[in-house]
Every structure is written in C-alpha cells, then in structure tokens.
Length: 432
Image (tube, rainbow, N blue to C red; front, top):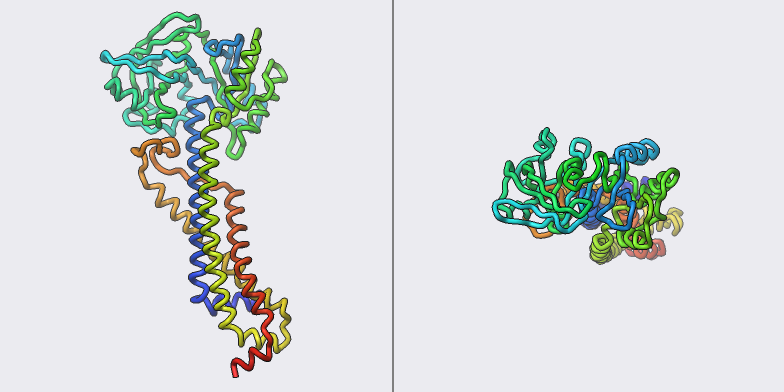
C-alpha cells in the first residue's frame, strides 16, 4: 500500500519534485562524465605507454647486467608458450627496443636524437598501433612494404628534419658490440604524439635486429596484453609464475628502478624480469590520482548543495501536506508508516533522476567526443586521435549511484521525521 501511495504522490506532485529531480540527475550526470573522462584519459595514456614501454606487461630478458645487451633468444617461442599456458593473455608478441641514447635520424643535413627505437611486427601488432594519429601516411603503408626498410617517425622529428612520407632517412646507432652502424630507411608514416612519448621511431623488428647485430628471432622484450578487465599487476604475476616453472626469473618487481637494482646485484646467466605497465607510469598514476581527488572534492561540494536543495524542498512539501498527513494519521496510519512514505517518495524520485542522469551522461560523452583537442599542448597524452576517450568504471559508477541515492534519502530524512510527528487533531484543526 505504501509503495502505491508513494508512487501516486510522486506523480501528483511532479511539478514540486521536478527541480529536485533535475538537480539529482545533473549531479549524477556530472559525476559519471567526470569519472568516465578520468578513467578514459588513464586508459588512453596506458594505451600510448603500452606501445612505448612494450605492452601491459613487459617480459625482459638479461644475460648480463648491461641493459643495452638485453635480449631474449627465440622470443617467438617464448611468446607462444606464454599465450598458450595463460588464458588471461590476449596477445604476447616480441618487441625490440633500443635502449641507448645515441640513436640519430639524419636527413637533408639535419639530425635529431631519438629517445627510443621500437622494433615491431606490425602485421601481428596492428591493433595495438591503430591508436597512432597519423599526420602523413598510415600503418597500412608500413605493413605493405615488402623490403622491410620502413620507419614511422614522430611529427616533432619530421618537423626538425623537414622530412615527409617517401623520403629516405639515415638511422645511426650502436650495435650490441658497441660498433657504429647506420641504415637507410623510407619514411612510411608520420604520427602525432605528445612530448612524453614523442621522439620515438617504430620500425620492423627484423630491421632493428639487423642494425644492432642481434641474432635473427631475438628480441629485448615480450609485450603481453590481457583480455579486457584483466589488471596488469595480476597479469604480471601470472606471467612471472608461469615463467618460473622453466626459467630463472627475478622476484616480483614493481618499477623499472627495481629491475635496474636487481641487475646491479649481478647477472651471470639468462634471467627474466616481469614488469607491469604501472611500473613505468608511477608519476602518471600520481597525477591521475590527484586529478580524481580534486574532481571528487568538487563533486562532494556539489552533492552537499544538492542535499540542501532537497532538504528545503522536502520541508515545503511536508508543510503543504500537513492536512493530508493528519488525515492519514487519524484513520490509523502509524508514525513509522508516514516516515516510510516520505522516504519511499525520496527513493523513487532519486532512482528516476539517476536513470535520467545516466542518459544525460551518455549524451555528454557523445557530444564531448566530437571536441578536437589535438592541438592543445599535452592533451595528446590523454586523448585518442586528438579526441576525448571515455571509459566507465563499473565500481565507480555503482559507488556514484549509492552516494547520490544516500544523499537524497538522508536529506529527506529530517523533514520526513518531522512530518511523521504531526499531531492528527492539530493538523485537522488547521484545515478547519
């Protein structure tokens, strides 16, 4: 009976409830959009970092303490073994990373140092590299090049060199033996990338092996990607445990510095280190945590304002319904039932408002995704193809839902309790 009465009252006083419901809907929509943007930005940043650092989990092989000698023999076999034995792995693929700081691109009398060279099997790794924003050329151009003498360079490097797609550039570096070597490569693509992950060039894995005098089939890393929803930290431990069955593996290492410290203690035989992506993103994680903290502080203030509005509205509603409450009490309704009636109305109103807020948040996602942020400094770190990326975190969304429902019910509790204590005789005399 109370459920029906509460629903009837919501419909009957819909105009009075409209602005309160609108405030709740906007509050939930704002919370959802902000958290979706924050988690989307973090996901976009991780996608870029996974290209730069070798996967969501990086398996690194060492046979001596010198990082520039990092190597995994028969990397394809090890990658296939991991993918076969660990169901959580979506993709395991060798990557060649040149860790030296002397790689130089030369063209037309200009030179530019590269922070990193990454050797990639583009045919197998196409999905992970589809997020690159190309200014010239495309990923397909490099996969079609049968000569394997292709290279993808950043827009920043191309600007300094004044190079374009189709130009021949010279790449100079040191081999693993410490000898200078160079090769001529054809620019097949120029991509736009934020400065943090800029000044990196991508070229075929076998080509980088040839230039660094590494054996055919060798790689420095195996890039491991998990299925959606798999945490990289958990995946890293799965990989480490699996590797330890047949290989020598370092104990769990959380950061790159920890890997370097383990190497400094001495390495005399082939050993592997397993590093989750977060190990390379500790500072970025701190920035995102600070951003979320500021965001939710602002949302907390907004929720408090909404609660004040709900409180005042329910006070007015409770006062206007004094006679109605008195009549219900006079015909036998208990105080607890009157309290429950008002609380049910608040609950119904909040549920309907949150549903509307969820729809508004998806509309907001759609509209904001058309905004091009590609030319804003540092925005490329958190965007995909220059556009905002949104990702809903189920736990955060559920938490926002309960916070908004609880805020509405708590704000309505005071006026509801006061209404339940109305004296029936006094209320009926007021009508008379």
